[in-house]
Image 1 (cartoon, rainbow, N blue to C red):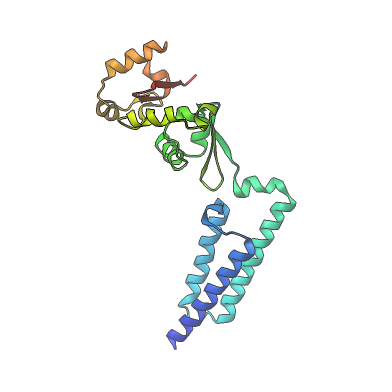
Image 2: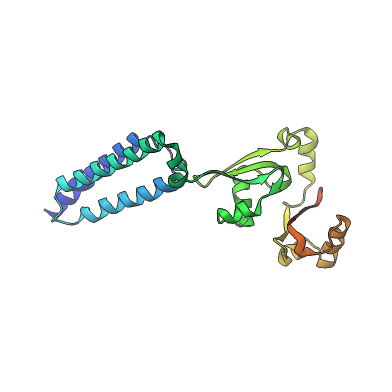
Length: 225
């Protein structure tokens, strides 16, 4: 009898979850907002708690699924009717790179560090900050990138340049802190780094928000001020 209850409840839950997903119009995981993600966790809890409990009958599971679907759809419609609710419920997209400059306050607002930013950029086939004109952190946790005009079109010269590169861009300074391991791995020391900064009119490492080194392009620096 236990297997019968589990089989029927699991089948109801599977069909119910599939229908709710279709009704809400979510076709991919990447389309889920933070509210959608929390909602899906709550729904899984409802199904999990009722699956093995004999005191919870099929009708209770159906009612829970129906009620959750109705509430979710009502919330979606409410957001459409009252646009002001979209921001507190789903969050808002945030510009984290503007005119080629990293917005450190925006990074902190979204609980991102420089390494996470680089990971998101690499997912968009961008391996150096200097190629980016604008970058927007979306509500689903992805990033949208608009490259600088010079980086949009790849020419034969670009391909030849890439063949000559011996390594990827190396981040040497993050928020005023020298990345010593990366600096040593690149074959340089702090004296060399300070000399490069002085060439750009910067006397203190603490004034640097971000610095990136490429053998072919040299040092790219953004100050804090």
